[in-house]
Length: 140
Image 1 (spheres, rainbow, N blue to C red):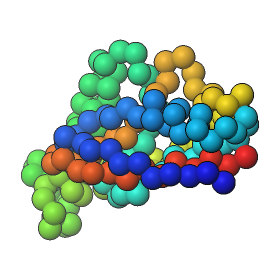
Image 2 (cartoon, one colour):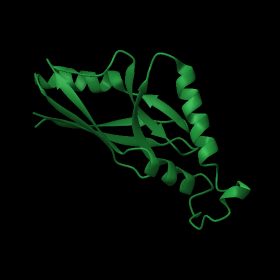
Image 3 (tube, rainbow, N blue to C red):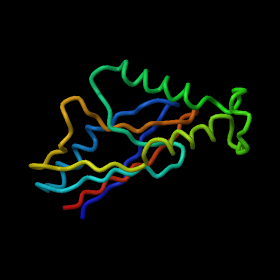
Image 4 (tube, rainbow, N blue to C red):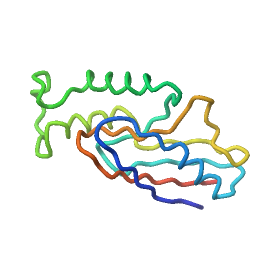
């Protein structure tokens, strides 16, 4: 079963689309039908499938999660104990727990069966730049 590990360099919190790279991997496998599993190997980042046409969607999602889970330095987050890696670390773990670390995308006729406006994103939850590893596995 084909698989690869790709790295995405982030610049801080936000959504980083890698639909094209995933599509290239699927094409290179020459598998007509199967399931692409996408897995992020981190506990402070996650994966989502989301609209890729209007950048306002990504901005609004980022703002929603910022309001839902503010930095540990926010007075409303005074209950947080884990703080060794900075005020964005525990909130990043919470955001990752609310989203997903693994996605499954059907492959039909050698292509991902994503909808017209759907894209695959790494959702970075930390403030600093990171190098995130994504595992792509195509099973049939």
